[in-house]
Length: 434
Image 1 (cartoon, rainbow, N blue to C red):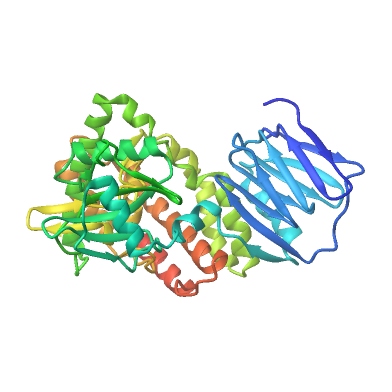
Image 2 (image 1 turned 45 degrees about the horizontal axis):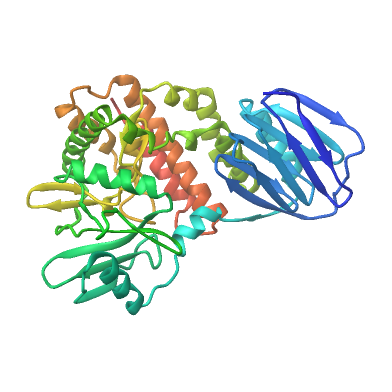
C-alpha cells in the first residue's frame, strides 16, 4: 500500500486514497462541519461508514470503518483501516485495534442520531420487481416452451416478488431469482446438476442456458421438491442433518477438485467476521445502550476469532441451511436455495441451521444441537470436525447471534429479536460441552 493521498473542497467533498492500516495523522485546514446532529450509516461490501452526508468506497477497498463529518466522502484503495475525518483532523488507525477504534468512534458519535441505510444489494434482493401473471407466462413460454397451468407466488419468502410455483400439469417447478452474475448462475446450475440427489436440478432454457436475464436479475426454473420441513427440530434432527451435511461437503469437494474452474466462480467469503464488522457492531451496540453485550465483542477480539477462522482450510458450502431450505423427503434430506453457495470454512455451514428455524425467523439455539450436528457430521465424514473447530464453532455461532441482533434490532428497527432472547441463546451456547 502506497502513500496516503487526500484532497478536500470547501463544499464538504473529501477524497482519500491509499490507507493501508498504518497510523497517520494530519492537523490542517480541513473543513470543520460540526453542526449536523445526525449521521448516516452505510455498509458497502466489507466497508462501513458513519458520515454526515454520503460515502463511496472504490471496489479495491476492504475491511475499513470511516467516521466523517464531511458531506461527500470518497475512499479509494484503502484496506484494514479505521479512518476519522472530524473537526479539521484526519486520523488513520489499524483496524485490528478493534477496541481502540470502537472507543474513538463512539466518542465522536455518542451525541448523534444515526440513520441506518440498508445496503443497496440487500434491498434489491428483498424488493424485486413485481411481475404480472401475463409477464411470467410469456417468459416461461418464450424461454422454456412451458405453458403454465398453475402459477402463483410463493409467499413468506425473504425475496418479495422473487419466487413462484409453476406447473404445466405434468411437472412442478419453482421459477426464482438466482442472482445477477450469469457465470455464477451457470456454476450453481452445474453444482445442482452434478449432485441431483441433494439439490434440485435447474432446467435449461431452449437455448441451453441455466437462467433468464430479466430487468432485476437472473431467474432460473428449478425442480420443485416434494417434501416437508422438520416440525420437531430436536437433537435427532441435527444428528441426521450433520450426516447429510458431511456427505454434501465431500461431494462438493470432489466436484471442485475435478472442476477447478468451477470453484473460482464462488468467491471466498469469511469477511463477515472481519475487524471492520467487529468495530461497527461494537459502535452500534454502545450507541443503542447495549454495552453489556459488548463484552462478547471483546471476547471475539481477545480470541482473535477472525484470524483463527481464516486459518482453517477452505471448503465449498451451501451457506444457508436454515430449516426452510432443508426438505425432508421419503428418500432423505434435500437442500434448496443454492444462491449463497460459496468457498468458506466448513464450520460456517453450522451457523444457519443451528440458529434459524426459517427465513427471517427469530434466532433460537437448542441446547446440545451443536454437539448433535457435529456428532452426525463426524459419523460419516472422512475428515471429522476436530476439537479446535468445535470450540471455534461455539464462538462463531455466538458471533452470528450478536450480529443478527445488531442488524435486525438496531440497524433495521425490528424488535422481535429481543435482548432477552439474545442473552438466553448466548447462555445456552456457553453451556455447550465438547
